[in-house]
Length: 406
Image 1 (cartoon, helix red, strand yellow):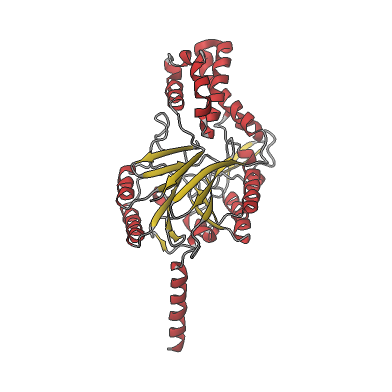
Image 2 (cartoon, rainbow, N blue to C red):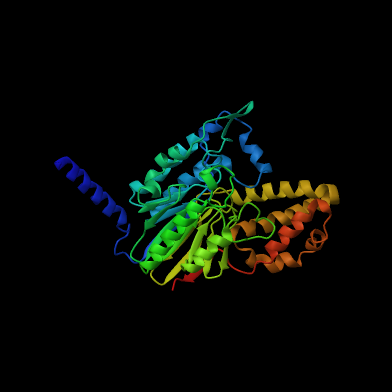
C-alpha cells in the first residue's frame, strides 16, 4: 500500500511538471524559427564522387551541404542564446535513419546549452520508403524510421515538454509562459511520407480541445506545422496547402490564433488570413540559407530573417540550378541564345522570391523586355508565365514583420 502511494505521488509530481510553463514568469521571449533542413548525413554519399554535381540540375537544395548548414546554424544559434528553437518539418532529406540519428545529436547541442527545442515532422521524415544512400554505382535503399523511432529520437525536442499529446498523430502542445501556449501540429495524415494533409477527425477534435483550453485561460496560441494554411503562390499550391485548411482556419478564427509558423513550400513568405498571420520560413537547405528570429512579448511579435553568415556560394549555386531548369524548358521554343537570356533572368528573379525580398527589385524586373516574351508563352513554358506573374505581384517585405498580438 505504501509503495502504491509513493508511485501515485510520483505520478502527480510528473503531471504537475508538465503543466508548468517552460518559461514561467518570463514575459519576453526570443525564439529562433527554421524549416526544411532536409538534413542528409555525409556518410551516405562519401563513396560517391559524382554526388555533388547532380544537384545542379535539381530544385536548388544543397543536399550535399545540409549537414554543414545545420552544424553552422546550431553554432550560430548557441551564440545568440535564444530561449527556444522551433523547426517546422522536413527535418531530413528522405527520412534516413542515419540522418535522423545524426540530426538528433546536433539538436542536443542546443539543449545542452540550455536552449529549449520543439520540432515537428514533415512529409519527408517518417515511414518514407524512399530512403537512399549513394556510391559510384548509383543509389541503394537504406533504413528509414517509423513513428515510434521518431518519438524516441526527438523526445527531448518538444514531446517531453508537452502538457498534451494527440494519440493519433505526432501533434503536441506546450505551455510557453503565462501569455502563450504553443500548439505543434503534425499535418501529415498518418505521419507518413507524401500522405494526404487532411487531418483525421480525432486529431481535429484534439486541436479544438487544446485551442479552447488556451482560450479559456485567457492565453494566446502560437501554432507550428509543416504544411501551409494559405496559398502563398497561385502557381505552386497543390500539395503544399492543408487539404482541410478551411476547417483549420475556422478553428483559428474561433479561438483567435494570431500566428502560424510553417514551411514546406521553401519560399520566404507571409500572408494575412483573416485574423491569423502565417509566416512561412524558407528552407534552411536552400539559398539564402536563412532562418527567422522572433522577439515576442505580451503585445507584439516581431519576426525578421537572418542568413547564416558562414555559408558561401549558396546564391550562385541556386542561380545555377534555376538557370538549368529554365534553360531546358526554353531552348526548344526560343533557341539557345535567347533561352540563355531568359533563363538568366528567371534565375535572378527566382532567387529574390525564395529570399522574400522581390519587392526591392520588382520595378527593375518589370521593366526588362524579356518579360514580354515570357508573358506570351508557348504551351511548353505556360507554367513559367504563371509562376512569374505570381512573383512579380509581390509588393511586401516578407523578411520582416511586426504583429500586434492583441
